[in-house]
Amino acid sequence: MVVQKAFMETAHRIVWCTVATVDRLNRPRSRILHPYWELSGEDLVGWIVTRPTPVKVAHLARSPYLSCCYWDATHDVAIADCQAEWITDETTRQRVWELYREAPEPLGFDFWSVFPDGPAGEKVSLLRLTPYRLRVTDVQTLSGQKAPLTWP
Image (tube, rainbow, N blue to C red; front, side):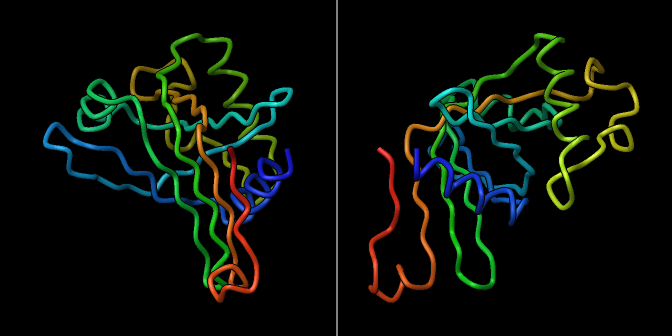
């Protein structure tokens, strides 16, 4: 649980991360997204409100795995390698929409300005992220003064 909490603290402070998927030729494709992470019991779960672009849909249909990498100028790094799943359940989509809206800045975001049809609109989708590997590092880790936090 220590690694999950450290990951979430770093991710929520940095907010925006690079998310990479893999295309049909095994080439990575990255984009900047804004995941929201929560602890569900003992498990860390990530949520991304996003457009279901043809590229994202095709990549995740071929391989439902992605990597989220947070980095800031102080060299704090949080990486989550995850399984991703499209969520169509309207109750869950509404709940996550509200999580973002109610979160304090800089994490909080009101998606109504981007998706005026709301969480049930056709131009918005929800990804659920289930991490299978976490890594949290900082400048002391990079300089060899301490070991990174990793899970599992």
